[in-house]
Amino acid sequence: MKIDRLIGITMYLLNRNVVTAKELSERFEVSVRTIVRDIDALSIAGIPISSSTGASGGYEILDTFKLNKQITTMEDYLFIITALKGMCSAYDNSKINTTLEKLLTTGHFNDEGQRVFIDFGVVREGRTIPGFVREIEEAIHNKSIVEFDYTDSAGQKSHRTVEPLALNYRWYAWYLLAYCTCKNDYRFFKLNRLTDLTVTGRSINNEHGNVPELLEKQWSFDTRRHIPMKILCKAQARVPIMEYMKGKIIEERENGDFVMVTHGIEHDRMWLSMLLGFGDSVKVLEPQEIIDMLIEKTFQIQNLYRD
Image 1 (spheres, rainbow, N blue to C red):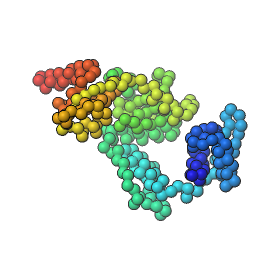
Image 2: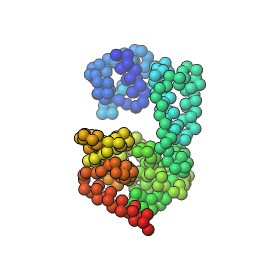
Image 3: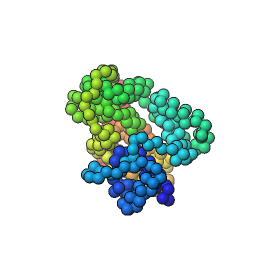
Image 4: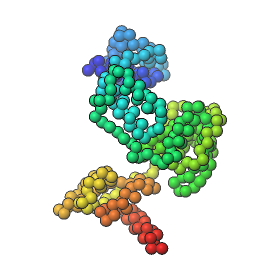
């Protein structure tokens, strides 16, 4: 519907600086001519949209414009409440709780209609991590340099001085994106590998540009190899295997056993631990490098308990 598209265009412009007609046409899957007509309609309706020409030209909404809250529906509010409650379960930040309370006490709506509940509490990391998150978040806000000792995945220890830019919760762990003054480059640091974190109070003088784009770019540099695997699974373990291994069944056997294809990420311990945890309910058929790795690990475990 046109009214939905007009609201969508308004929200899209509110969340960005300058947007071209081509970008809007691709986003809303209509022609550029239709976008031009929509912009005219919004201007007539009183939305203060300005346009500019040239290489960096496009449409933008004046900073002074405030959107009427009635544009947001009850369903939209419930999605916001669900997201905030999910964040609260994994992230200790009083401001999130305050925002949630504001939404619930306005009198215009409540969470009685909520039917989706998200709880990340079970994947919280150790006791020190919430403190690290709060300190780093404050350092980012105040543009303060931080220092810490860091142990990488190979066990190598180093002292780092960094300019913190963003915190990212990904793959059940918190990561810090920062500019490392030791390496003169951007790096990710896993918070559970940090010790002796210190907010120095020294100011960050460098400009780092668009942080969300930096974040996406740094993750694109993750070149770890994805190792495809074929595994034979016993029937009685079907449910937990499908739940945790997240693969695709390619063969069903008469006795209920099945063959599944999945993959593991090179140097990642989680999937290897899962394979070992399933014991004799899972047998790796290929590749040989994973079979050899599992044999070596089981020998190490046997020797540990035989000593």
